[in-house]
Amino acid sequence: MDFKEVTENEIIEVKAWRVPKSKEYPEGINYRMAFIRDGKRILGYDNNTFEGHHKHFFGRKTQITFTSLEQLFSQFMEEVKTIRGGKHENEGQDSTY
Image (cartoon, rainbow, N blue to C red; front, side):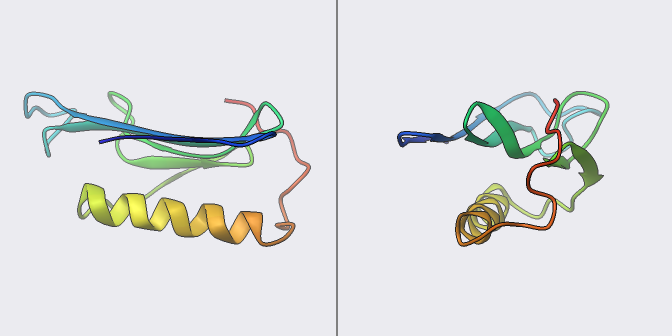
């Protein structure tokens, strides 16, 4: 999966690729999804080695449940849609990586 959308002040980028199944990648998939606004990551989903499936949201990292790449992409895009629809309670906080 390779998806990218760029507007004047936003970027949505999604990349996913097959990797050998292992302890770190039991599904055999490595992915990253990012929603960036004005140069700051607002929302990100990924499964970095040794961290498992998780998301970054306005600087906070939380675990997420992985059922399929398609479901995760849909969930990610719904969150982007919600964020774009109005200010979120965490907007304006530091969104460090």
